Length: 77
Picture 1 (cartoon, rainbow, N blue to C red):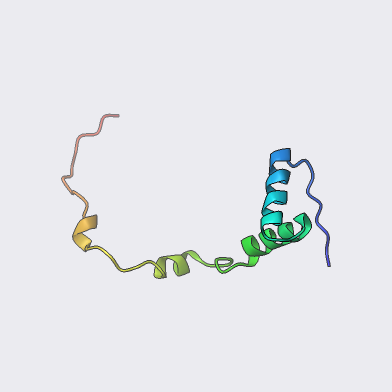
Picture 2 (cartoon, one colour):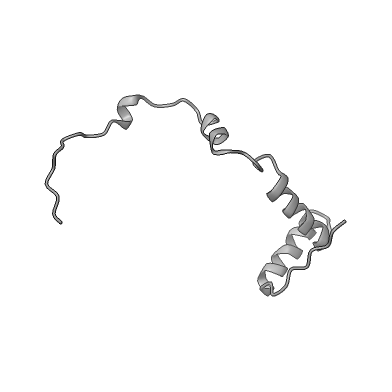
C-alpha cells in the first residue's frame, strides 16, 4: 500500500475532517481514505461527457431552444 502525506492544511480543514470522521465512527485517516476513494473511484469517476449528456432526461421542446436569427445585425467595432 502506498502512503500519502498532505502538508500545510488549514486548521479548519483538519477540524472538519476530524468532525466528519467522528460522525462516521472512523479515524481521521480512515475518513481521509474514504473521501479520496469516493472522489476518485466513486460512481461518477471516469464518466465521459457523452455519458453525462446521454444520462440527461429528454425534457422540453425544440422550440424552447430556438435562436432568434435576425441577421445581419449592426456590429460596432
